[in-house]
Image 1 (cartoon, helix red, strand yellow):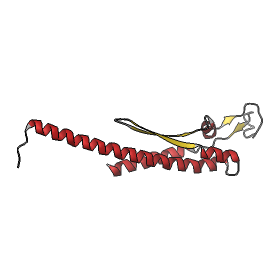
Image 2: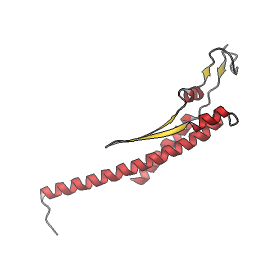
Image 3: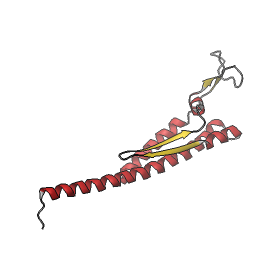
Image 4: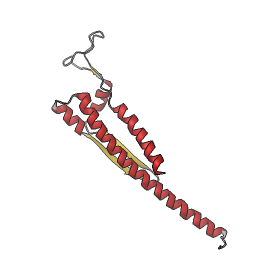
Length: 139
C-alpha cells in the first residue's frame, strides 16, 4: 500500500469532489430537461380541457406552452411558460369582463365574470413531485 502524503490526499479529494459535482450537474441538467418537457405536455392537455377543445383559440393557447433552460456553472434552471402573455393568469384565476359583454356567470355580485379554470397549479404540483423523485433516483 502506498503512503499518502498530505499534498497528495488534498489533490485526490479535490479530484473526487470535482468529478462528483460534474456528475450531479449533468444529472440535474438531464432531469430538468426531461421534467420540463413532461410539464409542457401536461399543460397542453390540461389547457385544452380548461378552455374547451372545439375552438381555435383553445388550440392556439394549448400549443403556446413552451420551455427554456439555463445552465450556469453551479445551477440549472428550467422554465415552463406560455407565449400568450397574461392569458394563463386570466384563465387560472378568472376575471371580470371590462365592458360587460360576453359570458354572464355571476349575477349575484352584479358583475359579468368569467370563471376560473385552475389548470396550472395542478400541473405544477405534479411536476414538482416528479422532479424530486427523479433527482433522488439519480443521486
